[in-house]
Image (cartoon, rainbow, N blue to C red):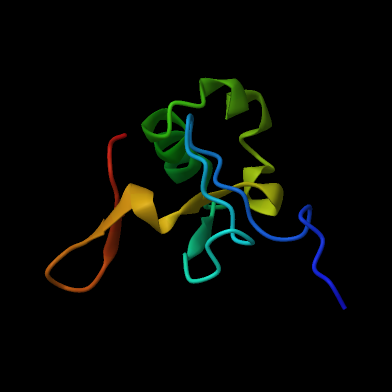
Length: 81
């Protein structure tokens, strides 16, 4: 069965072209349910237009791993884009 191009994850960061069906090894992270943390992600990925959906971003929006860095304790931290 062929995979539809509409299936899979798309990075929400401004100007990012990452798609899970193009780069299957790339990890994608769901926006946090916590509104304060989600707001930080929205600002960091330069998508202030998403602030009007801040309470529901975790349902449909993701950021790819290219916008995070791994700290010494192996925790991923969102980069300022």
